[in-house]
Length: 277
Image: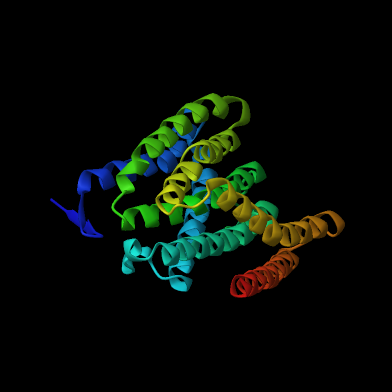
């Protein structure tokens, strides 16, 4: 039996097994629902879109670990103030990264996929909904890492199971009228209603953080970094729709540059305000 020792406590393996099972149910039953309720041909585009977004979620998570020390490597219980600062910075960092990825996926995702995989067309509704998953998954990643570090990951199990079951139920209800796009909508809505807030709520309470204040500041930062790149992408699409692979890639690069500059400015401003306190 595998035992994970964290902060002097042992966490039995079954909690991890059920948690991972819930994630499998969320991300894998989508394709089963589409295949069962529609046709096998409809599964491939959704599977490609899902793989792309899951890879982006993994990239955002790993970038967060690179720029911010892993919670597991620090004695969190010894210094609550330091733990709170690390939690805030990690959440801000992954939200900034995922916001940029979401803008790219929602605005130019279909065109980029068509360039990358010639002949594969993906419904923009699927990419828009799964782009939303990039945002709802960010707080889940950081909260899960923190709760795992303090030996409380098993507390995420109810929300994970609720997410899996609600995702399956909504997928079955929406696949008929909306097709694969409805299944994608079910994925983002089920996560937003369960895991996206439950894990951060538990972490904030453990860290003695004001939930409303923490959430409000994260939403404000998300708007500050996401709006400039989002408006830039929308303006380019409406004023000068890309024609050909070269223009699509050029527009994607412009969005990335605008987002990177905005993130740097917001992060620098935030750091200045912290030092000034």
